[in-house]
Length: 268
Length: 336
Image (cartoon, rainbow over all chains, first blue to last red; front, side, top):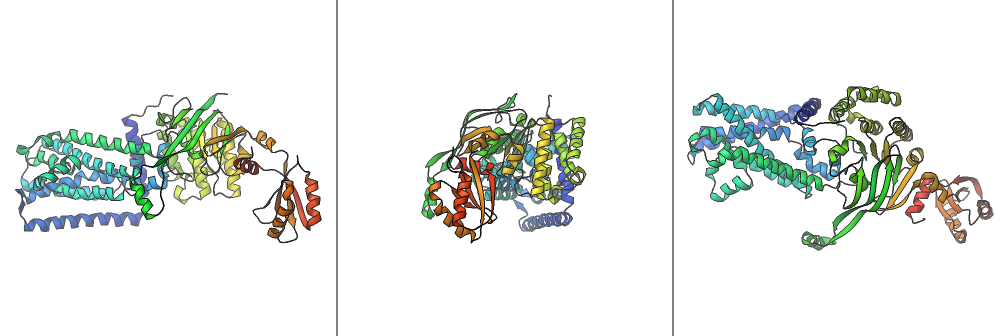
């Protein structure tokens, strides 16, 4: 029997597994409510500190309040996919450590896919709503154009930005295949995303280089959003960011899979 | 009989750091390149035919799990040949998984929060099982276990026995050619154990599924396996049918004695008294009996009994054939 497993197959399986995960999450009701509440509070706190800062400094390096707000909203939306769809990366370390990771090898489907498909974090959706709200508000205040081309660009570059965040997290999570105490790496990668909401021009040359080419957080908001925010100043890196994003994502996927192929499992 | 597994000279080596003791030692380890090579599996060859149930036995750390991990495509062999269903598992892991089922240790592979039936439906999609085959399989399951009770229970609410049962059913669901069972009855009560053995045996008969079973429970071996393979320290020690193995030790009997005196004391005395006769003295697990392992080629059991009787007051006695467990213990200790 010839069994083909193409994109259609994976999408179908994905929605089924995710659907089941959401169903089961809802069954732990108080857990669900509390974590949603926590997410909202985290976002509100983040926003308030952002607002306080900008009351004192009306602009940073030529970046105005609403432009910064735009970046902020953009980055919130861009990190939603990694939070919703790749949340299982946070547990990878424990799976590997306990030996439970071995179960992912026994199904005739892609290992990375199977692992990531198991968890869908609903909390990320609250953040998405918050990000969209912020972006739309800043958009209106900046008086940016709204038309089909701009919207398509926006979506394309939001996806690009997400790819960088996903790549960053994949690579950080994969560290656990090589080292036992890799949690801090994942934490660090996640902390770095906080810098994503600032325009790269406010950093000095060294950090500019690091945040562009090594830990590419400048791609999580700055480079892609330039396309919409300041169309006249768009540089090569902004234009190329979708391609660079794909490369980073693919690289992180390969690294993750390389780690998985090194996995020995524990005795049982 | 067609071979579903062909193994020739299979070896798996691990690089292990030579660790030093103490804080100073662990600091040294940080920079140490002082590795030693450990052979977890060492030059194993065997073929397994379609429909066989093979008991794959060995003490902890013998290399059983490592072999199974290679056969399931998790690990890449260091050297040697390994063909499963005509494929090299490590190179074609996904394809290999179509034709195998795995129950590994006590780690459930089912979706924890879901009722079993939802897990089954997901598996049906993942393995692309045709509707008819799926229905037929559930019908067969229905005749073997109380399926309705299991199907609608979330896996996390199941007892260990129910979960193991469910995991085994899930492993057979896509009608694989080979099913690997790694200690399927560990931690289960007696009735659940026999239930699971029956289930495995029945599925093996109905579907002609090859079963590779690792276990420490000789009850599993006696109930299921016609052929056993024993490995220790990565090397294959024995590969033959179970009768043949018993034949090796056919001349051994276990004489069980319940003395009037304190059991520990009596055992110690007996050990001294029977020292010249090549008899192994031990106390049974329930602390009720003294077991005397007698080689009848050397001395008759009745002679031993009369000797013991002349020295001790005996309340009760039993004579037993040697159990498979003892045979294997004997092999571990270098008996053959």
